[in-house]
Amino acid sequence: MLGAALLTAPAVGQDTGAPVQEEQEDPNTRRLSLAEVIKMAREQSPSYQQALTQLENRTWQFQTYKSNYLPQLALYATLPSYTKDYERVTDPNTGEIRFVGVQSAVSSGHLELKQNIGLTGGVVSIDSKLQRIDNNGRHSYASNPVVVTIRQPIFNHNGLKWDRRTEPLRYEEAKRNFWEEMERIAVRATDLYFSQLQSQISYDIAQKNVANNDTLFKIAQARFYNAKISVNELLQLELSLLTSRQSLEQARLDIETTTLRLKTYLGITDTYPIRLVAPDQIPQFEVDEEMALKQARENRSRVIGIKREELDAERNLDWAEASSGVNADLFLQYGLTQRAESLGPVYEDPTSQQRINVGFSVPLMDWGRNKSRIGTAKANLKLVKANLEQQRVSFEQDVYLQVKRFKMLREQMKIAQQANGLAERRYLGAKDRYLNGKIGILDLNQAATERDSARRSYVSSLRNFWDAYYNLRLQTLYDFETNQPLTMPLPF
Image 1 (cartoon, rainbow, N blue to C red):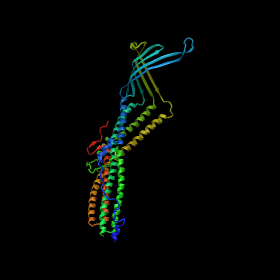
Image 2: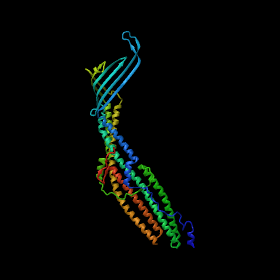
Image 3: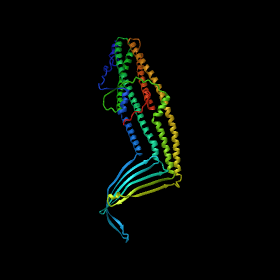
Image 4: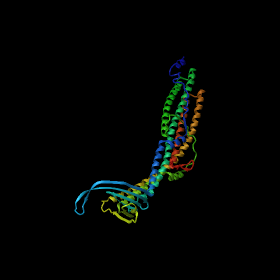
């Protein structure tokens, strides 16, 4: 009678939820591996587009730098400049001032070929000019068929010389930054991938727990009816069923959240679900610390950046020293010139034209301004060198520690994989023994908890390993699996 009475109570002996049904997978579900997710992130994610735009911007800047050392050809023209006005004129005989109507049109053409001299910082140009003036119905021409001009700063800062040293480094740094950004994208994609994978595993575990607890609860109902188990044990199984259903709802929300984050990062706009495949196959290769350091020094952008920043500081010191002393400019020009009333004769028998100009400036009293400027540049160079040396040491330490972390996490992952298999076999054995009445519900719950914990720990270890794997690639820009640098061809 007691058993019958308890079976009629809402808390015991009645199923507290709908029958457990296996969810049907959406036929449009994407099945993605870690490698596929990373490939998509490197080809279509907003982060990839941003990195590509930055590299393209730096590439055009580098092309601009190279063009500074190539001849520049330009055409300037005025067709025409027309004036109709009254101008004040003084009569040379009487000194009388009066206004005279003036009507004129000036047309001109100027073709210039210019070349920077990188070695000296000067400029050499070749010009050809032609002008025509129409004044009150009369016209005349003036020409400069050839004019050669040299402008040469003396004792000044030569920016072209320093550009030749720093701009190739800046461009190489930009390329390596792009390759590193590809690995950063891989690291970020891996993080989002495993966030969803862990939610997916939790959801699968929750589904399995609901199904198992529902089955055990129904078996326990029959046992309780036959007075083979106590009411406390039945209540414990019912509570486990309710708890597992609550965990399933939370897991469903978590997987929707992590899927949305992954899709947003990958640039996926459809509403199809994603099912991830756990990357259980671990690459087997050895990593030597000295080899990793060697590759990092050869491939990383930071190594180039350290050298470039030191050159920038030296350039600032050179500019300060050059600006504080004697500054001089040399201007030399030689050409041919002619004037005529018609176009044909303007190019006949031109006369020579020469110009020479040497100008200089010498600071006489600046109240210590130049001295302070040089002192500041020297102190900054000293500080930059000290900071860069510290960065160099930290950089190498980070590479060394990353190699150690990778090796440790690979071993931890192997242990977690073994523990996961053992925990699964232990739970299956405990479930069989419980159904045979050899152990109690507490022992079964303990085995289930340890199985779920081992599964989550294994996935967490997988996550840590793959994070270390791609961070090692990022730190060295080297693929130790294929033994080749990660300096891929540029996408343009």
